[in-house]
Length: 252
Ligand SMILES: C[S@@+](CC[C@H](N)C(=O)[O-])C[C@H]1O[C@@H](n2cnc3c(N)ncnc32)[C@H](O)[C@@H]1O
Image (cartoon, rainbow, N blue to C red; front, side, top):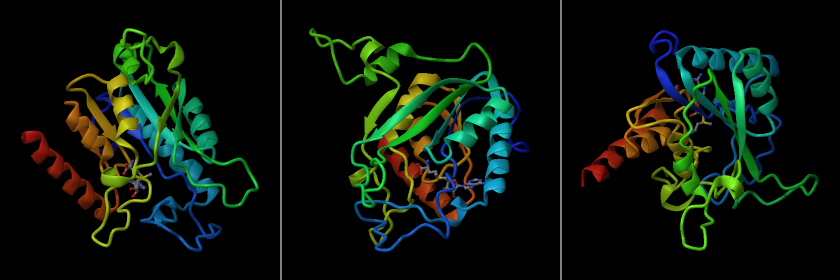
């Protein structure tokens, strides 16, 4: 990122990094990836703790460098890695504006019955300077509640909270054998909220952990320029296929 992207050139970063949830201790008996639920047990998601903290520091520091002064960086996480992200961002002097909660309406059932059912992920919104972009009038359209005359409501009852199912059906990118192409594909609606809220047409959006290219797809739909970084060639091929299909559809 440091070598290939100019400093202070990016308007918005959406980062969905490895959460460091995988590893030897993860019990994956009856793994149903490709079916109703998707579990993550990937090499790219496996670090020892010290390496994970260093990795988190390195990529957030590099992201801050390429971000414009009025830019925003949104980082998705769960309760497992939110601590590291918040500490690193604080060290790097990024200001935390909000923590969005994504409520997964079709989250995995509580199999162990030893904790409350996990049904949320978070997206931390950090800014570098004071003049960040926030398109309030666009965001307010995400409020499912309308006024009595059918208009969009103010944000009073649309909070830093959004309900979206885990990606399924036609939106889920599948391999030929029917299994999910990627274990952590993010819902387009979540990225739509972020891109529409914190960027404008022709803004440059960067995703340093591109996966299946969800950020690129949403950026294309809303006339943003985008850059995606991904280290796994199979995911790059999947993202390329997904984006070229979208471009064919957009031409009609
Ligand atoms: C949580 S997934 C992102 C999924 C993506 N948001 C989507 O909707 O498909 C993280 C991705 O980061 C990639 N990755 C991990 N370490 C990386 C690195 N150092 N540089 C670039 N990509 C990396 C993984 O291969 C994986 O596809």
